[in-house]
Image (cartoon, rainbow, N blue to C red; front, side, top):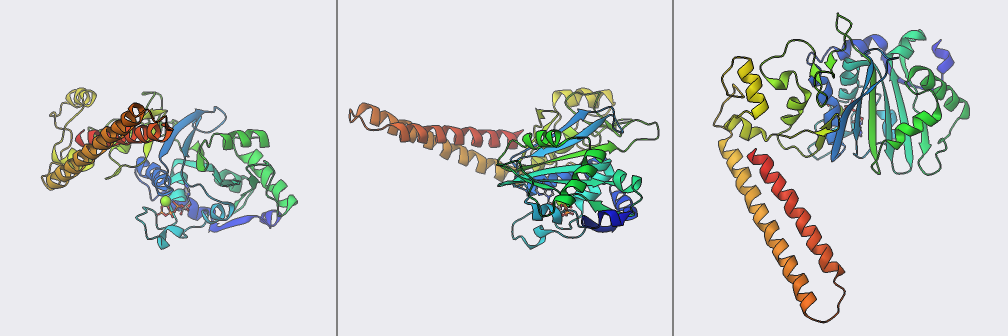
Length: 365
Ligand SMILES: Nc1ncnc2c1ncn2[C@@H]1O[C@H](COP(=O)(O)OP(=O)(O)OP(=O)(O)O)[C@@H](O)[C@H]1O
Ligand SMILES: [Mg+2]
């Protein structure tokens, strides 16, 4: 059977390995974090995690990750399917990924299949990584269709028309999208100049036949189904992502609602609970302390960071004052000069002050 797909990419691994590798994630949110880390590594400023109902698929919905990061060109998209191959390892910057494994192990822990759509410069590329396809076609080698198109012409980037046709027929049969138009609509969802949309489907089920992620109890959250633990980070994706990074840089939205990130050192130095969490903790019969891990080790770090953020805010507010004076001076000088650059400078200074104030507030939260 595999000979039929002779020209298509192979992930150079057996289906069995794919299944075994997914078991490395015992904790469901750990698997989700692999996809969040990748968006952060791609320099995304925003990541949306959301679900789309689809009764035809196992679990009844698809789990989607949409970022505005750097995206991938067709060559990079081809590389992502290989295990143990990561271009991040050579990078001097502080990226999280390095093993070339997380996307595959994380996504395959969550579902049986994923389709990834990515846009970079003038190319749009789609990668179908599907256990269902391999199982139904009796392939024990993982074969991965990776067609590409030009963004401007929406025409396929073709090296081999016959191979493109085979790839599309697999995608229409084994992905949730049954026509090229439908697939193009998914690319349209990537709103940035570049970015990536990953759709995981045929989600893993629990023994009772229900999906592991409960998306019904809270419309703006995804919960690990079953009995809640007293720490929300263990069962609420919103609470988990709020403390995922030491220095949160990327805005995360869950079901279209922004996650209010917490400043981690501060949480541990002065554990506090928000009003709704207090209700939950009180309900669980615990004390009002949010975190059992209380430490003074973070006190100096937290206070230094807050002092630095206060200084940054002072400088930003000073810049606003100067920009206002400059504009006022121009307006009063009767020189009839072009005031547009001064208006723009004031706008920039105001936006910078707003961002800086938000940073300070996040650190104080
Ligand atoms: N959202 C994304 N945006 C851009 N590129 C991505 C994205 N997700 C994955 N990639 C690319 O796919 C590659 C493979 O991802 P994967 O998570 O498997 O490995 P990694 O991040 O390099 O290492 P690790 O196993 O430590 O996570 C990445 O190195 C990156 O080039
Ligand atoms: Mg990764």
